[in-house]
Length: 288
Image 1 (cartoon, rainbow, N blue to C red):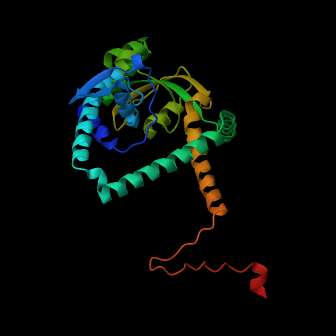
Image 2 (cartoon, rainbow, N blue to C red):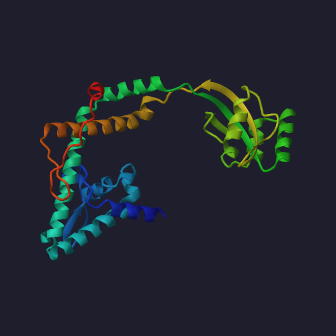
Image 3 (spheres, rainbow, N blue to C red):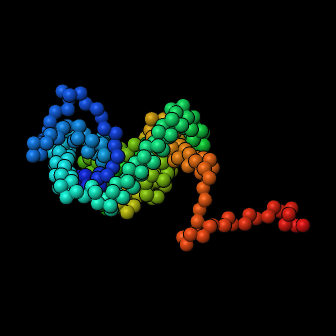
């Protein structure tokens, strides 16, 4: 499955524009030859950077597949050039279209990079942080069981002095709970199924549910260990999303500015001039 997804990602990378790192001569060794033609390591890195889902992966983890992708691409390119397909009018048109799209994206990227500073992102973060509503959280452990009877037995054992964590490790049907003693960490009211959330938020720190809680997953015994107002997400957690938000707005502003500065005339599909829709009359004018 991983190889199939990787292969699909490699195919999707065709015609993608990337920034290619520059290697020193001794850092860019030959990694393949095709009919005597050398393929360098930088070509493999370029292929990796052209595929968003692979950019953060270690090169060694995907090197073999990427190298095969580069070799395959070069073989196809050589054959296409032998057939002089680069002189084909349709190919020329497609290449020009791709070239134009790359230039458009490069221009917008440069504008966004220049327009959106780190200070602007931080300022937006502070603005967003002020608008976030307070959110209460509880720190929860639970033991998931198959039947109400089993859950009642666990509650009885807890009343008899058994430790919650020990029972969770021994009896829970939640795979993650066997290792961490049923610890779910801090949850908000909308973070779990309603039955679980409602029961958990009725408990005070240190309390255990007096009766089993039924949900679609089974029967729960719940313990609340702490209650707090959730801190806002840190700057590092959300700066990427904030930068993307600002970038989208900036792109729209750039495009609108270019349109305002240019003399643009539009025509209908039949070539006749477009007529602007009549503007609505001002309220006072409409009354006269």
